[in-house]
Length: 502
Image (tube, rainbow, N blue to C red; front, side, top):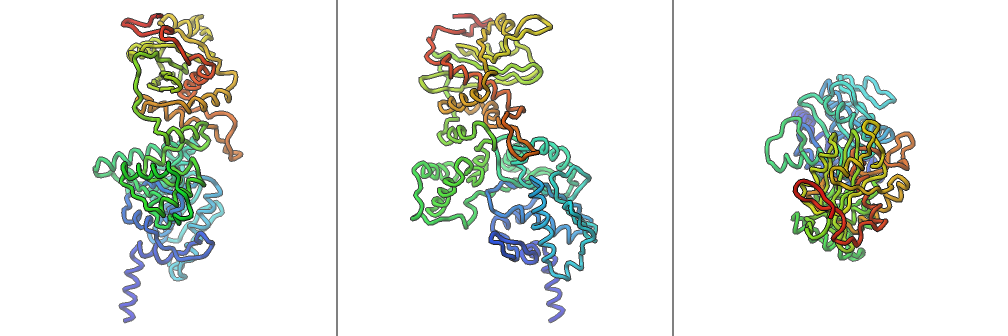
């Protein structure tokens, strides 16, 4: 019997899933030392593991802890494993190292720790075991090859620390050895950045049903309603009518059926988190990215736009003029927005962006669109004369048939941003033709100050700035009343061969 019992124990210890569910201790949400047990969502992740895994999640499902226990278990049981964990901040890195690596290791039975003892443990968040394996937790991992990489909260990193995100993308991810394991785990933060793009590629791969390469990411999505604990007493919480319509939409559009206790719980979370509830507790993958980036200037306005379904197929009324607003770059992007004003409605019907092209190219774009144009608004610097030619771009555009009107956008930046906020309350966006411009507006945000851990007072100058600046040009013109109540016989129109006044 003793031999049989010994063999049974050996068989159990040889099973990594059993080890994860029985050997490691963690500190739970109440501060108590408990034996780690997989939650249903964690078990689903384990049963569906791939080499490269991207985890889009709702809050408080315990995936950071679970992935790091997988890391620890591999390091202890497999010789010569080089494991790297990248955290969002230094404080979070220290917490992961202490509470999710060293604490579970030190809680192992003494016999197992003697079987794989620590050779070296440093204050900078690295532990090396006698079997040659190591785990290092830091805020970056631009180093040599590793066999296990976990990137925690990559969404916020992409949103607030773009330089660090680039380092991870170009230095950390390529360092994972072929056949190694990679986990990118995060809640969403905005509809731009590498985490968003990775999820979109993984969604497309899943939809195609094709077999993945080892270095392609498999998407694991865990919505809030997959957690059986997320329930509340419906007799204590009133669910507003707009949320009941939202729940009906989940059922009609996604087949998600919620009972009264789940609906009550969600209503409570929405009151707590407000605009952030979609990213904190998404119901389906695309919903997680509807919330604008943290620090976004127009986050609240776009939450309302999404809730009111004002991104849709917007008709172009051929009887009304189309007005444009511009941001003209020299070596970088030139962006053009196309608007129609119908009563109080601002119909945003089109957007165009390009780089490295001269004004003749953009005049051709206007002709190809075939719109009947009204007024063309450009920022203040359109009148600046170029040293090489002695003429301004305003004069050069006029020779091509585009008569720009200057809008003094440089005098009051924050006033212009407030004008955009006000105008967005009346805007309807064409879903297909303005897709790129919408991403610019939703991603336009304050610059992050790494040194002080807060946002600066000025906007971040990045790929989103040009589209957002072009939109601000129209918002200032709208605020000044330059595009409301225009008679039909004013402005310019397109005819074959070019633009002419009417």
